[in-house]
Length: 257
Length: 324
Image (tube, chains in turn brown, cyan):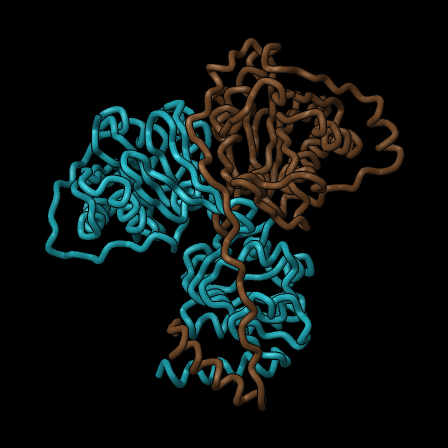
């Protein structure tokens, strides 16, 4: 099976966000594989181990993105592709990303594409379904179980807590939800091997794309932080008095009861 | 240019979800004088649901009835909704940022090669420009976005843009449109109900969330009872989910759901930065924790330092009293 994983690097979830001049500060920030994409990498490896084939992880990013690709290779992916847009693209949105990936996949034989259901930074969840639509293959989002038997694909899909049993067939794109698997940590031999695994670097010229075609359809005009939440009141007295006071405050002061 | 906005309605158990009415209000914000056309896909009761959309501000409704549209699939709903878009050539499209909205709208945007702003929490109009606010980094920051070319296409986060008042005197045309749905590449074999009865987390006005301090799946029982008295939903921290006290679908935080209810009661939750990202934009936050140093008290409006197993049952009784 030809298995591809769409991967994005994101800020470590521990990071606080700072904004300067309407832009997010990324100086000195720790980056990680987007946590939902980690489920995708793990699932790709599991499916390959079961059905044979090859796992290729693909990312759009800059030269620093190599780090996350190497981590995926250390987990067990076979090959990596970095589409480096640092020099060519100033801005992009989900339209741009899907367009680049569409061009990348144009001449590929694909059985299965996995992605995170959402990236924890921009959190639009658009790129997976957009790409599937452009490639003319079906997609299933927020999956929590995946079974492949020949061409038949049986999926558990999380729908706001309910589970839908979905049946479809290869080729398919799926986006991964928490609960799908437990992503492995790269082993030391894995990390050593990853250094020698192939990592191809492409630019948008290599994909026969023109900057004009990638013009985003949306624009970010400002970024700001939410007003800092001030610590409120810690109530005092006997517990039962505190509970009574709380209910009274919720009813009369903040009027939410 | 057309001044028509399509609002794609969504039902759950045969009833329109509240976010549909909020989407109508959002469409009104985008174009106060525009024509709002509701779109409904399904099999039963479309007429009745369409009428309800009109009471909440839609000018007319197009219903798409087909046995394949009984349950949502991206292929089925995609074809049905595209047929309306082709016919109406709207200026914009609004839908709720729900499981269905998240799944369907990128497909349509890709087909139309349009932009799409997902998960908007606010809309302002500045001259000709519509500016959308949406949370990024799970609410650690916000961005303002505009659509630079083509369709104004947006999904809105439930519970943020208030619906208009229901006006039972409004009337409008409800047009049943025939739709061909072909080549469905996926089938839903079964749906297993796991979600708590009643209120969905993303739409709940009140959330009672438990953390590691709740200590066991059994320990969540009083939280369910409290949520029940408040007409709310139960959520959890990652710690509680990892420890198997509850299902991952309840997880609130940077991984998991981001919620903004009117009232958030954090029970036995210490308040890791990832959890705070998912809930700190709630309107009123109550923290109950036995550790006075817990981080959660830094974002709480009201805090009680104490044993949750003592506090929660008392709270249930007190609330019952005032609700009686």
